[in-house]
Structures are given as C-alpha cells and as structure tokens.
Image (cartoon, rainbow, N blue to C red; front, side, top):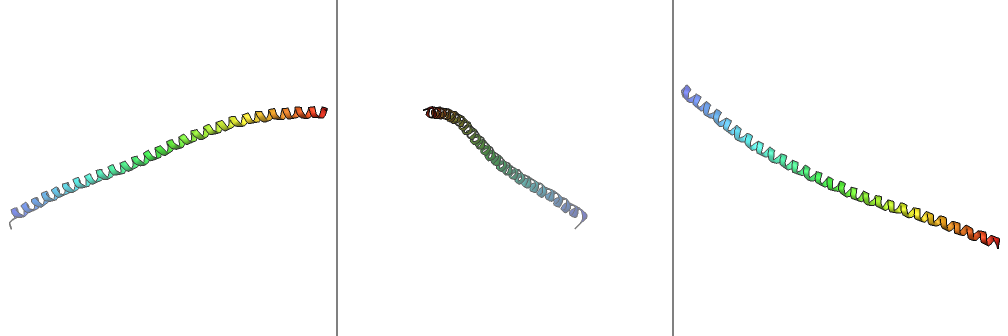
Length: 99
C-alpha cells in the first residue's frame, strides 16, 4: 500500500466517523426533546391537579365560612330569645311572689 491509499482510507474513515457522530447526535437530540416534552407534560398535569385541589379547598372553605356565619347568626338569635324568656320568667316569679 502506498501512502496515497493509506491517506484515502484515513480520510474515508474520518468522514464516516463524522457522519456516524452526526447521526448519533441527531438521534440523541431527538430522544432528549421527547424526554423533555414528556417531563414537561407530566409536570403540567401535576400542576393542573394541584390547581384543581386548591380550587376545591377554596370552595369548601367558603362553604364552611358561610355555615359559620349562619351559625353565628343563629346563636345570636337564640341568645336574644333566651334573654327574653328569662325576662318573662323573672316577671312571672315577681307576680307569683306578690300573690
């Protein structure tokens, strides 16, 4: 083999190596893009689920606040009714003691 043949084989191997390297790079890049897209979709789905849970908790909290407000109003009304009943009982006791 003469030096030209060896140089030609070297050049062919170098070009072939570069071509294989380029193909490997493209394939790896495509896999990375698919992997990142999948991870991004999973994260987005989890964030959506968290958002729905937070919204559900907020609705439950509002409903609980409304029930507490209604209970407070009911307690105030009952308290007034009890005060009125005590006044009537006291009046009846005074009348009974007078007789």
